[in-house]
Length: 293
Image (cartoon, rainbow, N blue to C red; front, side):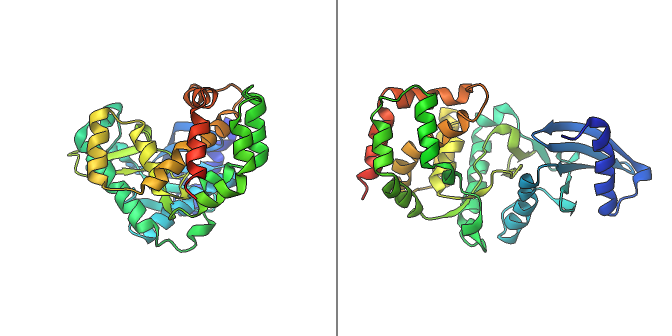
């Protein structure tokens, strides 16, 4: 754990490695969470944002910016980087862009621009070198974790667990047959950037960027949008593989429950997935996946 009185020194050292003189800079705390330290850096009246990753696993976000740029996916500008930190443009002081707001989830123009960004991400993402080596959200689905859900959810008598475990390899193989591309995996307005005239949009914070099937992102976005914004998003995005939807309808519930039961207190965002499990709907969804073969 990094103490607050030590982080400033660490950030200054990282900036020194980037070539910035510590004598003329100021640091303002934006956010510290899960070992990711985000600060505004003011150097000679110019403002930037530095992200320092104390957890080595989270440094993958630095690589994510490189990956996205390599295949032409729009991102915010990166200024400099080290092994443990990255310096970014400060959107709060941009003449072109602004940070997302909750109203963007209802705004039709915002929804259309979000869809355009995801189309580029998914279309260009197939061409990423080493795609198969990237983080895949569905890899978290393992037999021991299914057993843990069964125990912690107090649903030991639910037939769905035997159905999953008896067909585990078949289900995992079905997932692997989906066409792979880059997936963002973390949509919400707090991770959104929109141009001030709402003609462009992009996501930032790429800690969960990885590979997967397209529909997982489509579902992830639409679950946060208003009904009208959903229609606009889907109209702009275009068609998707219905088989992916059948797979995702079941698999996304398992992924959500695995993450939810890792928390000390079961989170609000996991309750609907737990109810789908208890009322028998997950059993039906897993059956539909099995019947795809």
